[in-house]
Image 1 (cartoon, rainbow, N blue to C red):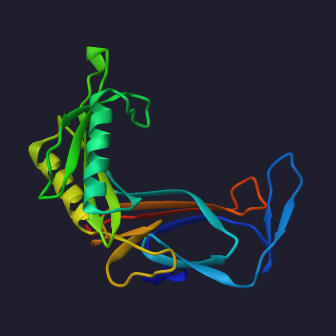
Image 2 (cartoon, one colour):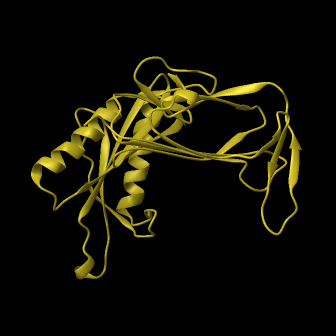
Length: 232
């Protein structure tokens, strides 16, 4: 784990500190707001970096992608809970009750596993044939240390076979490396953190974003985006 001061990737931080104990967040035309902070920082693992932030900061938006693969922690559970979760989602998709981020309804293609890990294969339903889907979405699930995790990857159908194979391989590698992570835990070695989870894998075109706010502020207090490019 590398401290933020030694970042090798691209780090964008929007933060205005008036004093070591005060945070100022300005939005026009509202007047400047000031919130008193404690002197005790909290350690956060963000991507492959560790940052010390005021204890009052709470994450409200988190995104983490390895190329086209996204990782998320779904919560505690057992093998039976994970199977029930997958079956419930598959049934909901099969009934046309699930939409993607673009508002398009997803259809269930199959329940095929990926390298022994349970999963679902989905596709968008597009009414106009001229805009027929060219992307297949694969969801891969895992239960690690009593926590349910999911990796989701988008695979472009009309790409060359080697590109599809590479995207699928990345999804499988990321899914195999998923592990839960306590909020106060810092991983060691080649691991990348999201909220409540980590992926043990080498650097490979990663983008991680965190947005923090405080209980006294309506607006975002801190916005962080880290982009790292894989070797070569």
